[in-house]
Each structure stands twice: as C-alpha cells, then as structure tokens.
Length: 102
Image (cartoon, rainbow, N blue to C red; front, side, top):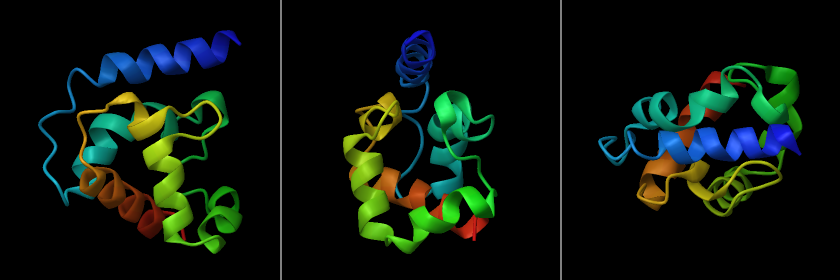
C-alpha cells in the first residue's frame, strides 16, 4: 500500500512538469511522465527494454496498451498521473515504449 501511495504521489508531482511534452513526441513524454516508474520498475511497472516483461503485454495489441495507459491499470494512474497529457501524447509514449521493448 505504501508503494502504491508513493507511486501515485510521484506521478502527481511529475504531472506538474510534463505539460511541455508535445503530441507525438513519444520519447519526450516517456522521459517526462513514464520513466519515473518504468525506468526503475516502481510498483512492479515493467521496465523499458525488458522484453520478457513486455512480451505478453505487447501481444495483447496496442489498443489494449493504449487503454491501460489512458485509463490506468493496477498502481498506474490514468495518463501516468498527468491528466494534462493529450491522448495522442500518451499513445506516442506507448508506441515509444513498445519500440524499445520488443
């Protein structure tokens, strides 16, 4: 429970600095909004580039990944806790993550 609260707090704080990511800049959005959890595996977030962790998730299709990222899943809040991100920003970040994790 403490890990979940910490993850949500980090995501909420990060939301204050991610407004500058432009739509379609998957790496920029990832660096600013997603890396805080997905680089280190916070709250069991699958790490960027971990092919084994991403294999089954990627197999479910991008639409499923987009929905999870947009609406939240488990400890991950919707849009990584930054509701100012557009859907296109989030989808571009998902595309970036997939491209680095296959």
